[in-house]
Image (cartoon, rainbow, N blue to C red; front, side, top):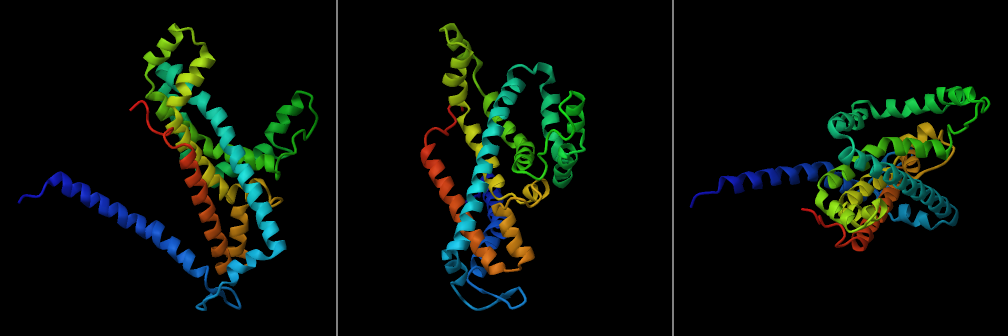
Length: 290
């Protein structure tokens, strides 16, 4: 019996994908789970002693209160970042598809070109822009708004701006892919039936763009929830977020087991959010225009 070459190639690539995922995702995840049940060494590090102390510590009222406040702050900021990216990314995607014309490719290139620059450089650039002596305050001062009009640097507002700037391309590109596949004849038919621009958007464009909206929201919300570089640089450490809390446990306190336990809790919460999100949007995320 001859072997189908196409089936063999598909099986080979699938095996390589599973091997890659096992090495870079599954193995590190199991390692984090394993060390969360071990004991912290006297001078940091890990001792091979099984314990539930890292999880029982979460029952401490003061510590659990701090963690819940930090988690709530992180979820709220990630939610605001996602909403802001949607509000800007949707009009941007619609403009690229329907209004950009011959300039579409050039504008799309400008959208992704920031990825060619290092993430840290892009984030530090906002420190220069938002500082009291930065060019943004200088421009505002020229309009008579007074020196140092915006004191946003090292505040949650600066963190939100950094999140929005760095994650907007993910949302815009996801929505662009969905909007580009829209059947223009559906919009024309809706217009012929008397639907105005807003009604066409909410009745035709938005429902058919749900797949891109869901994908973009996931690609923005989850990284923003665990982000620690942007809050550390633009927030100046004035507000504690989940990513910063984990970084402190691993790098400063050097309590790897407890940091791993917090990571496991965060992973479970993200998994629960994704599960609920999938249940709520079940049937709405299908590609209706495929």
